[in-house]
Image (cartoon, rainbow, N blue to C red; front, side, top):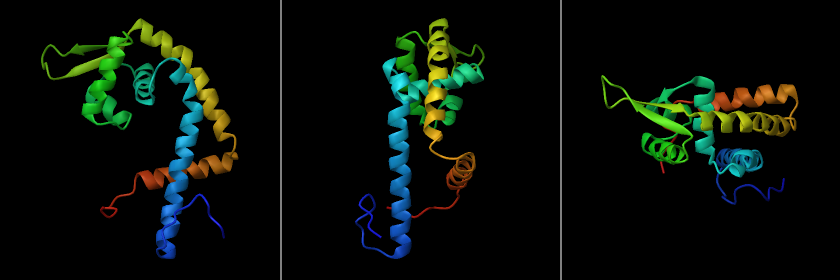
Length: 158
């Protein structure tokens, strides 16, 4: 079998299969993100900024730590993302009066307006992408991604 898009590594069958699967997973993710990201990119948002707005839109105000965990970013990175959203007046931070270290982030009216305009288009774009798969394939993809994402173990080291 010729595999122009896979690894050029000449390891064991097990290694090559794992690398090829990983490459396909990453390439598919990047391709889908590039196609579906046009909606929020047109609004001047990064994928992380869109993720924060979406999380606040559907989950209500959240602390920075919970936002970071929800969109899979480090607490340092989430600070920069929120800083940039705050500069655009899309979110606002509020310090807890009892514990000043605890900061809640909430949408502003402008942020709510923006995400409510973008989100339906984002859902439609994702749905269109996923229609390349049957309903059963979508379910299986979800199951496999969850299995991979929840895997425990050291996974080796570089």
